Amino acid sequence: MTGWVTDVHPTREELDACVHCGLCLPHCPTFRLTGNEAASPRGRITAMRAVNDGVLSVDEDFEEMLGFCLGCRACEAVCPGLVPYGRLFEGARAEIAAQRPTLVSSLRRRVLGRVLPTRRLVETGSGVVRILQKMRRLLPGAVGARLDGLRDLSDNPPSSLGRVAEPEGKPVATVGLLAGCVMDSWFGAVHHASIDLLRRAGYRVIVPRGQTCCGALAAHDGAAADAKRLAEVNRSAFAGVDIVVADAAGCSAHLADYRHWVDGGIDAETKDITVVIAEAIADGRLPTLEGDDPVVYQDPCHLRHAQRVTEEPRTIVRASGHRVTEIDPDGICCGAAGIYSVLRPRAAGELGTRKADQVRATGLTTVVSANPGCEMQLRTHLGDSYRVIHPVELYRERLLAESV
Image (cartoon, rainbow, N blue to C red):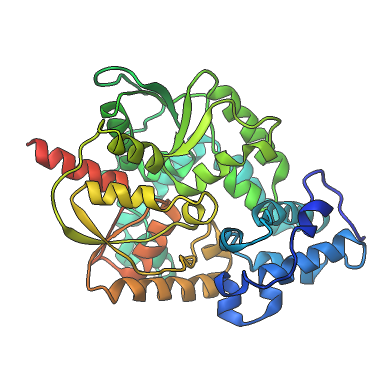
């Protein structure tokens, strides 16, 4: 079979935006790893265009080309033609899911589109992980290495679902916080820091119980129908709020692209938590604290490349009384990329090692990053002697210390 079969496939207009200039090549992590044109955005778009024209089919080679891509969207940030590569990538992955289903890939997409959005199943799985963490020394090396990337779930705060927090002082707006799938169970401290800072900044915060997973992982893996369904659920859950905020970079990036998955997108404005908190600091609704302690900041791809958010998290770090130490002017992906590190451990491991080496070269042991996947990847490759923390946690921690 040649051509497309889904309604989310890459369009001729989107494909023709690429003029094959090659400016994306040095910014693509998989091209850097291999030097292979087929592992570059330009090569992948060429293959998509060939499928669109009926020259090639969605075959094993096409699946491998797209499967090797991290979806980091670094190419978008440097593209003079404004090629929507993230959209092309998700559309092509949906075609692979539709035209080349296998038992393993179908089960994987079932997990991403159905299991992760089911709160009780995630909570049950988290309970199992807590037990495994306690048995860490008895587990095989590969399993233990995965656990090393996680926070200690025994210390995780209770769920934020259903919570309503009233603002300090004059109300600014009503914020709906995306709880996400694993964020609430595995990174609850980030939610609690986000809610507290939003409340201090004058926002009324609600965490609707009717919400679900943002759908990013499902969309990236080609589970288009589930991605659409999850977007519809969240559009209804967040009806009536002024701003929808996510404190995971991958989630906020996907929320910003909801218009591709549900007609009109989400009704409210969507923002990453770092943008909202940086605005509050700039407006004087949150204080700037004194200090110059150096920390490393690592750019999550879906903040830097997908949303072009770079200064805001650094503003938060500086406002917390810390000096930002840069490690990578190009913002190359750390290799986490959702479930990429599970599916492509060799490539992900090489990228993770390179990022960890950049951190070690600074001599600093505190790393700030605004995405859970990046945090787990960094912790896995850096080890226990390094601390990896979200910008809002770092700022709130210092804020609480100052008020003692």
